[in-house]
Image (tube, rainbow, N blue to C red; front, side, top):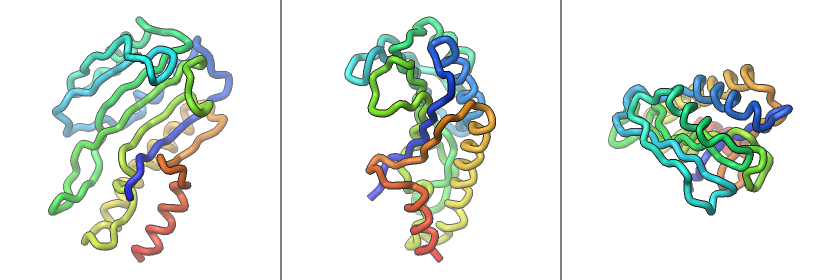
Length: 189
């Protein structure tokens, strides 16, 4: 069963004063889709995820990072969450392998935004099946390796650019994604 895949960062000396600078680093390093024609959506959510967004605006493709940051700065607050629902290109199988836009969300949590853990930045990568070989699908191992390389390059770039205290790659079920990937690679052969 496919799970949602997440990458979470907790940063040293994180505060309201520097949170949008770190979010900008994430946005500038993220490999936005070159194939997407659908708009992205930027949201500012106050207090916690049960509250309605105080801002929700479409961002036409290609995403203009300066426009996202300007909107975020208009609503800068320690108890807000900044969420860009966007696209990146991954290999996906639908009768054949194709490089197609896949949903992702880039999130910055204000230090006082209510959430389950203490992460400051988070990326939702969509379903973990995009990064796991599927032995029953021809060419899966080689093609999925390309998706994994894209993921690992982004993690490496973010690790270099941010004052990382902790980093966690995890799936919605709570399973350790690294172990899940290792098992899938061994099964694929």
